[in-house]
Amino acid sequence: MITNDIYGALQLLVVGMVTVFLVLLIVIYLGKLLIWAVNKWAPEETVAKKVAPAAKAIEAIDANTKAIIDATINQITGGKGHVTKIEKLKN
Image (cartoon, rainbow, N blue to C red; front, side, top):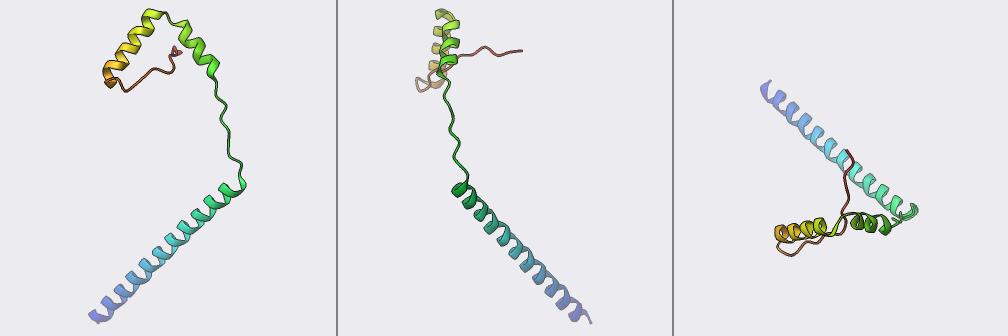
């Protein structure tokens, strides 16, 4: 009686684990199919670069402030970093 219960429980365990494994495989391959379809048929987005506003933002800051920011970034990054855009945050 106890052995029948154990075998039934083990059978249920194996069936459940195999079912979960198969469902996960289906999800993985459907995800790969979706990625393939999107890459094939969807156009790639092009990002337009807006250089003019960044140049205006740097010009809006006086030379002393820009020099301080450059020196700070240089010191913090050990000369590896550089400032590409300075912009005032809106509150």
